Length: 517
Image (cartoon, helix red, strand yellow):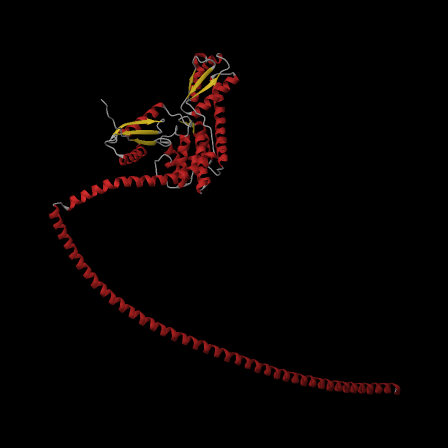
């Protein structure tokens, strides 16, 4: 019991002692923490004071620097304002001086103008007096000479005209010689360069085609029973089939070369096949027509490839191919068009023009001939309409319209197409002109020459390339003969259509004749 009480008492005492020790320890710790906190606070205050002092120093330094910069900037602005003020003052002074000078100049000009007006008035008065004196002198001269002013003027003009006629003719001849030398050399260089770079044989096309037969028996088979085969051929193809006594040959006649070609190929196919009857004729004709249309496109594309022309409407290419089966005066239209395209391109290259556009214009200048059998109108009108329809360049359209002189040429390329067309048509062997046209041209040349006063006789020679005009020497002198040659040239150019050039020779001779008896 006592032991338990002692244990409890010891335990209580130990509890209070432990509690007291804990309180003491806590008090000591709190005191230490308070000291540390105070020290930290004191150190923070010192650091803050230090930062404050540093900040104040930096702020003072920055304020001083800004003040220095501001003072410097103010001084610069003041100096600049002062300089501007001085400049404005100088400009104002200069303007004052200039205004003063202008005022003086205005005064001087006004003074001079007044002087000029006075002098002008004085000159007008003198001119009036001079006119009056001249009129009086002229009247006195007319009274003395008994010759009016008009008569004297006419007489002087006649004398001057007579005296100057020879000089004018000589001047014209000299200028013509100079122009001919320059133009001849330049034209010769261009044309020779073009022609030496292009040459083409021309095969003459006619309105008939001949087909060789293996034997004369084939004629009877082509005619057929009661002529049914030949009637079928003529009705389908649209050509005339001529079967005469010519051995082993028949003739196809048509003004349309394309129809004639289709008919020729059809008949040749029938001859090789051996089966000739109306149904077979129609079958072969349809096949040949399709083959020819395909061939036409190939021909058109080949022509464009040879000329280096690109981007053309397929319908227009087809029309170019059709020119292969069209001829004019025996000259194949496609070969002629390609020749014109080559020549135009070569001349355009020499002159620095657009070569591709020149070739295009040359190729299409006669495109209207491809369908002039089908549409009313001239090939020029048809060709221009086709070019517009397929959106060709205005230069190409004008070249088509002007290559026969129907419209004025508006570009150098149009003139080159006209020149190339003339060269292609006029060179020897290019065309087969008819006898009627030939005789008509010769007669017209002689009529033009004989229509001039003082002409004794006119002769057209060298197939119409030259005319010789014999004049009466007592009516036409040397000066008039040159003028007559020029007038004849202008008449021929304005009234006639002809290929190439025509030389005009006016011949005047004086014969002294005596008889010895």
